[in-house]
Image 1 (cartoon, rainbow, N blue to C red):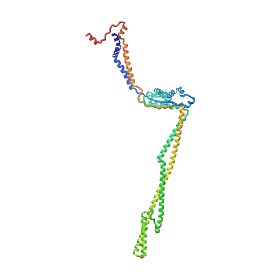
Image 2: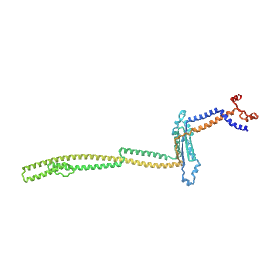
Image 3: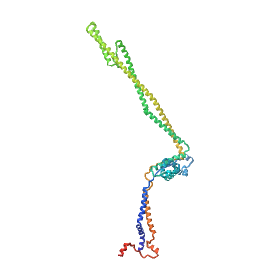
Length: 477
């Protein structure tokens, strides 16, 4: 019973003996493997993968399906149209266009590749491109995932985006039956260019001429013209009336005739009122003189004095009328000057109105041209939509939509540092333990009582514990 228990304990004791016996080799192998893998993983340049998902929807002609009672989806699925689209995505023309668009030739022509011919280098790039490109359908068969692995995350995103764009363009070229769509697209570009030019010319013309609001500007011009013409008419009428009165005054003044002035003349000055007052005084003095002459002779002292006062008053009236005529002449000259200024302003406004009419005509021509260009542009847009629908039908009725556009990846796809370290620990453990037990098995030795019976053919009576040199000295002592 004790022998059986000893035999059951031998494997565990043997295992521990091997571990302690070869612990240096086990530790050396384990740490060398783990250290090498860890350092290599840390020094390895990370790779990034940019992905995008596109939805491929097949447009079915429902009228034909009802007319001929066909299940077009099931019929077309037999041709595996998704695989056909994937093949177009992976086609060499698409790859060539992407390589030219992102400039991979210049990126690859470094170091040893500088001496390679363009054709050889291009084939190497295409081969590497296919290795890094992944195009796979998802669980939903109509959704295709496109991915590309690169050391540069931005380049990976650019390449995926370029693959999608060039796939759409190349597919359109494959199934396009006529050049109507391209022709309409070209006409739209020309119409849009002409429309932008006309709008720019109109903006420049309005800025140069100041016709931001032509209707309001025209109304202001005509209002100013009406105001100036009214002022000119009033001033001219006033001048003519004053000249007429002045001619009468001058003639009477030269002839020494009695001058009758209006007592309430709106054009008269304070001098006219003074003259009228003098004339009133003269009349009163003449009445007094006539009354005195009835009683006295002309040589009577009071009559003589009154006669002298009458003569002085007449002289004063004559002098004041002369001054009044001078004032009227000066005022007429001022009215003529004002009339000349108003006439010049009227002529200036008329020239501005004439120029405005010409500018307004040019502006209307530009606006009419813009309206016509907009109408042509709208018609071309409708024609392009019709051509697009026709083109979509010609493209086997497949509608392509980007449901997940490519973005610049942040986390690398390789190396996976955590996984690499875990694998290094596992591999290092297995290798080191395997090496230890392998070296132990290669040494011939007897470890258990069963080995003694098997190798020597004699029964085992007992086992003696292993003693080292120190133990022997203690026993002998």
